[in-house]
Length: 241
Image 1: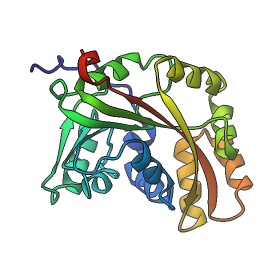
Image 2: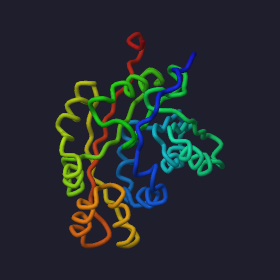
Image 3: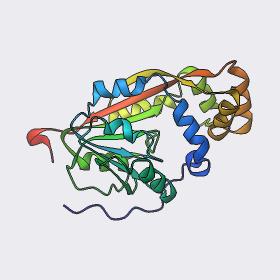
């Protein structure tokens, strides 16, 4: 089947686009106990299935999917990150990385079983085109999994709200509920090798004033971060259109 036409200009992701090395430190610090992947296995097991990682960045999460998946396709709009993701996954024969956006996935209709998007595009109202596109490429019974930061939970959520005063977590959750998503909340632990790394990561995630306040509120090398995991299944049987 034909793919969607090429997308327009993607929405920049300043943290990873501008500071990929620091973002790599952040990726390694996030969810050191594997809570998110454990939850994903329960709600959208990918063993033996075809997975798409939307907004895959440098491909950090792809190897974990590739351990059990039949195939993994990373989709990323920023060419420098596409190159890094391809380099990271070059030895994984079941993996490919394509340039594209959430609103125009370079994939045929009904070609994958799991679409995974982690803090990559989906932030409630306004992400309807991305959801529609994900449902297009899912096979009947497949699952769209949207992993998003929970701005209503933990100190990290308060730092987010300080920088994004117009961001309303209740509105976001209401949007996903209205779109037919189920919700799972998890609390993860981020842990850094030293205080310098912690401060650098806070510096690319928050405005300077918020980053400094967050840094003073973390006495050691770790803190908790809440996430929301939104899941929606593609219809099966005669309902799939």
